[in-house]
Structure formats: C-alpha cells, structure tokens
Length: 308
Image (tube, rainbow, N blue to C red):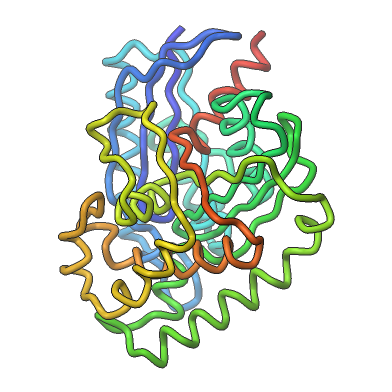
C-alpha cells in the first residue's frame, strides 16, 4: 500500500510518500518539502505567529493534494519541538485540521528518540549489537541507547541546531566569546543528562541521523549524496574538532559553499558542529556512522508494525 507522512520540524516540513507493507522495506515514491523554519515565526512570548500558522496550513494543504495525486491510502502527520513547546500549539494544530482535514500528532522528545532509534535498528539490524543514536534536529537533540528495537534509554535535550543558533550564537559569524560561551553551555547541558546513558554501558555502534549530521559528515570528508544511500558515511570526532574553529570564523554564505551544505542550513551548521562535538566527546565516541533513516521512517515502521 502507499503511505504518506507529513513531518513538521523546526526547520522544514516534509511529505514522504512510500510504498510499503508489513515486513517489507518502505520504498520511497516521492518527497515534497518546504523550508518553513517555524522557529523564526515565534513571537517574544513563544507563540507561533499568524504568518507561521498560515504558511504551515498552506503547505499541509499542498501535501494533501500531492498525496491524493500519488495515490496515498493513509496520510499521517506529526509535529516536534517547534509546536510542542508553543503556548498556542494546540490552536495552531486545530487551525490546520479545520482547513486541511489533517490532524497532526504531537510527539514528545522521548517519542522522537524512540522512533528514530527504531528506524536505525531496522537499518543496521541485530548484528549491530547495542546501538547509541544521536539525532540533532532544529529544536532538540535526541539520544537513545539499547540492544532491542525499543531503547533502554531515550532522552531529549533542548539543543537543536536552530535553537542553539538563535539563543547562543548571534552574529554572522558569531564572536569568539559567544562561541566559547555556547560551547560551555552546550557541554554543561549535555553532561547533566548523561548519567542514564553512561550507566547503560558502552555501545557496539554509535550512529548519527538527520540532515545536520549528514552535512557535518560531508564537510568532514564523507561520500557525497550522489553515491547513494547505501554508501557508508562517518562523522569522525577528530576531523570534526579540526573543522570546528574554521566553521566558527566563517559567515553563513561561506559555509554554504562547503560540500553538502545548503544555503538554508548554513547558518545553523556551526551550532550543529558544537553540539555534535560535545556529544561525541562527552560520550567518548571516536566517530558516528551516518544512518539515512531517521524519525519519518520510524513513524512509518511503527505504523506498519501495528497494521501487521
């Protein structure tokens, strides 16, 4: 059957259409996305502004049309931290549902971590042993560890690349003092959350997912997207540490000229690098293997499991 998932993140809104049935690998049929950047449509009191609500509603309506054109039998949608944390998030979701017929589900940070972990486990299989998964989104960092399909530990930390850029790294480029302070605060925030992970033991495989991790891996020498999703890609901690000082002195326009970095993501790349470097260092990880599957695939897999 053909399934569709609308993923409303802090940076982008995606529609992923796949051909799938229980027990089979979901095969992508089409993708549709918009750089909505909901985090930039937030008022001083944390509410989603009317413009952000209108743009989100319009895009979800577009997704409905695309899904119908693609023959989607089941269309689902979910939102993460950008709307989850907004005081008027429920009102925004009601507005979208009234005008499009799509009720977007709100995922908690822990649910994000668990569903992303499920996708990574299915990608690498049981032979990967105990997995540690790190996912840097726009609003939050998700970490999960375990040896089954449901992790033993799943945590969400408010250290997404968009949030860190907005709150801790003003300027283009930011000042050296701001970079140092961002590094200090990011590391302190992560360190305060590590006890459940360190008590659970060392992983056999450490994995990074989502766009920020893929961009950082490419900047650090990983294979380009033209080599396909099955090419092995890694983010080495040592190489990332070497690139970080350079990224800190570059403007967003200069970062956009780096391989694998889009203009829309270039301003957040430094924040992502600071968070990834801190995560790997504090957890004692030499490298992260990049997984092409993440939260959207986890949502689809869980839905298929429940159908089976």
